[in-house]
Length: 267
Length: 306
Image: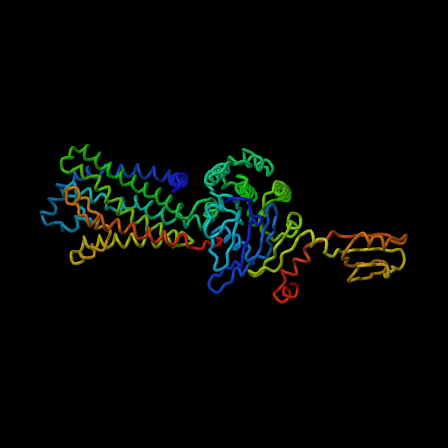
């Protein structure tokens, strides 16, 4: 890994990262506040039969408990979008974008192996993903403190939530980067990576909203990140294994493919 | 590496690169010696960039092999690039950085001191005020100048330049030629591709001509120039005496004017035609253009030429 390349990759993302970190903290703070303000209202609505319970769930999350709200906050499209900016957008364009613009050959004219380049970009993007997840979780802890409801979650489990979440998003990041080193243009790399993310998300949400399709959730990576379960001390080790294996497979693919690819002159 | 450095800075042996059924390079064998400025000529799509990209490890040879600075291109690509400066054809730079930031970033990744940067920027008229501007505001010529500086700023043992004067104005082209002259004097090796015949003639010690991925010829430019035919125009008072024109071929007579192609020594010819009735004599400089155009011609013509 090249420290200079890693720093420069983070520097390219600097403004975006700062904006997303601020937004992540704000979103995290908001979740316990929404939970504190509306959980009783939602519970009464469901108990009265006026509103189906399924529609009050979102993925594996809900607003009936704080751990459920934390899960909802991390599986909400807004949170997904914040992390996906780096895990999908930045990773899919990282190499293919440089290749299309012609700067990749200027970079690779230096004494840098393709594996070093790959590892440096991956390191920077994983760090960005970790920071965004940390900002959202940090915001959630802050919001819980502000609401005075920290006794409803086991804060000691938060590092495990971060680890599981990191594993999930590392899987999308390595997939995006594997696509990026496989294509000459960023368009197809973004398309494939986004389709992978959306397919996983669709399977998870479909299963949560339609009980007959609950089996589809097992095939979604999102289903293997359940902060609510972790915060109640029920972490499934298999979930960690699945997300980290899902991160490892594209990484191995990229490590095999990238150094062997022919990089012809950009059109 | 131990002992005396190898004379051949670049050495290819049957270097071949195919993309499926497309033969981009076919069995290319050549040697570039230390301290030489070596021109690599060919029309667009001939395989010049493919050859350069294979030497630098961007492409993997289908068969054959090559060494650069005594190191195998397949095994020591990173080390080769440490000692080499490369200017890609139609270079792209990071638009969001300033020229200075680009040069700092690239030399930092190179891991060597930018020993020549100040001198190169001075000679290519890149003052601090220009270097502090974003690359996105640069003209094509300015980008090319930055490209030249990034390739040479760390004083590489070997410079590989892909169409280096593309986009440079005539003044800057000459400044660039003088830089290459100095590199040659310092014993550096330059391998550059071009399709500008005049610059090859001006700069190169030797030249390889490639067409459709095949090496057509390797020539010593000095010898080639000495052997080339010169266009000669003579005007006489009265009727010209064609019997006293040794070495003149393809003679055309137009009244008192004679036009022809002279091969061989100029001095002997001038002595032979010296006469009080000779009114005017023009001998055009020998040019490589004619020789190269033979190789650029369609396949059947080129085969006749070899």
